[in-house]
Image (cartoon, rainbow, N blue to C red; front, top):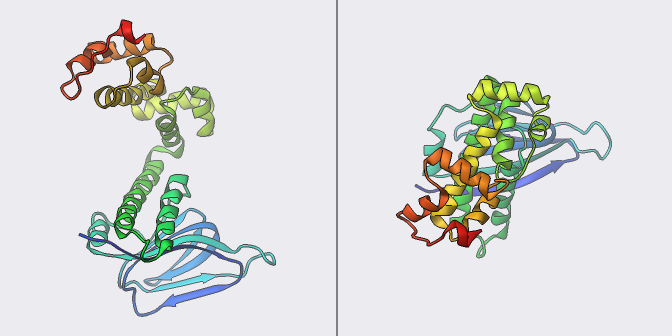
Length: 275
């Protein structure tokens, strides 16, 4: 299965703009509104796209994009990232699940960063353009779009605040953070954040952070030669003694014993020589 990236760029409209394809698209179009607003007409429907709205169109769809004059002279009316693509892998990805025409997924920095890297690679042009790298980036973008859509649906079911708490912990688990910071990120009081998280996920925020830290520590023990003390530090544990205690409670053995029994790497390390 392959992919083909036909066009990838971003645009800013400071005056009225009109683009129409009447006879049906020959390819897929992904368009993420990042600033301002516009109107999209397709398959007999009208959509008003605002910042964070993702438009997904497939071959055969008609397409009419309308950007109005900006409210202020020389002002920005609309800004977006867009791409045209095709290929058997894209066909298969599209058919994995029912797809709406528009999703409100936000302008999360990781998604924008991935899209921007794809844009820069496309701009290189031949012969510097690396089609293999483009293929990987485009597939990654498609999968990340699915992740963003899934997160949006979770927000609808569980509430955006609890998901924001979860994402904050995942991003900051391996560094020292305060629960107040997570609560503030989600726009909640600390007591409300603690209550909601436990209700939705069946564990405390600290328990979830420890799960992530232990998983990261296991990977480091198995696949790196870092000392156990260094692993404890890089995985977010305040001290080695705390890491040792939590690890033993979870796995029934010390980090040293786990490393010694690991079948992948036999690294000779002891707590006395390490500390």
